[in-house]
Image (cartoon, rainbow, N blue to C red; front, side):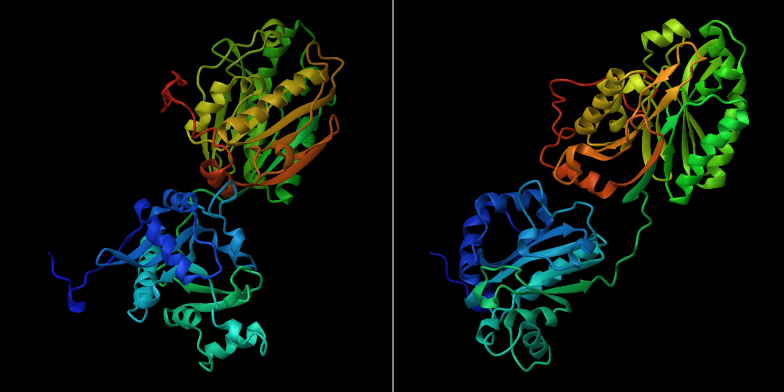
Amino acid sequence: MAKRRTRDQQRVLVRKLRKRDYKQVRELQTVCFPGVAPWTKAQFDHLLELFPDGQLCVELDGLLVATSSTLLVNGEAYDRPHTYREVEITGPTTAHDPEGDALYGLDIAVRPRSRGLRFARRLYEARKDLARERNLRRMLIGGRVPNYHKHAETMKINEYVAKVVRKEIRDPTLNAQLANGFSIRRVLPGYLPSDSQSGGYAVLMEWLNPDYAPLERTVPDSVRVATVNYQMRTVESFEEFTTQCEFFIDTAADYHCDFVLFPELLTNQLLGLVPPDRPAIQARNLDRFTDDYVDYFHHSAIKYNVNVLAGSHLCVEDGRLYNVAYLFHRDGRIDKQYKLHITPAEQRWWGVEPGDALRVFDTDMGKVAILICYDVEFPELARVATGRGAQILFVPYNTDIRAAHIRVRSCAAARCIENHVYAVLSGPIGNLPQVEGADIHYAQAAILTPSDIHFPRDGIAAQANENVEALIIHDLDMAVLRRTRKLGSVRPWLDRRTDLYQVKIDDGGELDEV
């Protein structure tokens, strides 16, 4: 029979929690938090799956004597008053943010007979080490005040907290947190109503990581986009055309937009300036404006400090006619996306030929892709673009009747859901009676989102009125997009069955299969 270890032989170990620890964790929480329900098995397992590094314990000779649970969060979201229920650990609205900048302490529990051995301090130090390793800005906790019930009839909670700070009253939890380097931010009323010892209150406390080194973000948390419901008017000169375009670029710049999108076949407005002829000949004659078009939008993107997606333009290259979307970066770079799927009307009227490569563009606001009108009706392209890192799909389109518009709009919305990305749509409105094959237009510019709790109702961030000239602007929350891709109600991107199906592309790009 093994000898019982004496106190000076006992082994203390700080380690990560494991699923088989649940029974001891439940027992410990029941003893330490009377009146507060312990984790369910499902909650405990979910915590370990969400953030295994943040679930810790102290083991004494094989027995759990203390536990600690934390999540990663966006610290700014919890500076305001909030409740424990808002720090969800299960379901689609979990507070855990894999890219968060702060630890949020959910609990620390120490067995009563093991108190006084500073096991809580070990757990706080382990949390601090985790914050340093991950270069987190700070740690937040909603600390209990378990002795408040003894004084609740004679003093307000703020007075109680002040007396504890002045050491006129002792509160085991609040005193321990102050001793571990935490500072008080505010009292949180109604934090945990079932905590009768604390009167439902908690104290929001903060520890700042002294080793935190701010990183230069390569991916923004917010991107401001503008898109145009563009009126096709008869113009008498190229300068008149650019005056109309410049109004929208200038306005987008005034609102500090990062991108402004124009519709497909934007330069069809210039068809009235080329000699009358068969539609196929007229379309090729638009190429005479290519140099002026490129020069103007290149200059405007730099002048107004906004990335301009200048719709698309019919260009002749090596004798072939292409429908090309241009991206004019505000740093002076120019990129092009050739339309990959050509509609029967484009082939019949103008003889447009398809491009042969899907591109994803690195911009100062992250990676984006351009799907020109009909291209968005093919799910494979959006899937490949997402696989290559695009988080925003820009969709310049050109439709003549409502049925065609709805087809593009519905497909763009589906691409948002399938790939968990944003889509920005711009189309032309109005009539060009003198232009055969491009005489009527129907459009409703829109900014679309995935469909989940965190996004606007109906998956529509903003939209113009149908067939009314307008510029619409919206801030796209990229942090929410990244977080919900992993933690949303459904995860179409992550839950693809690539063991059953794959999208393969052979366009010379860096990705062959998705």
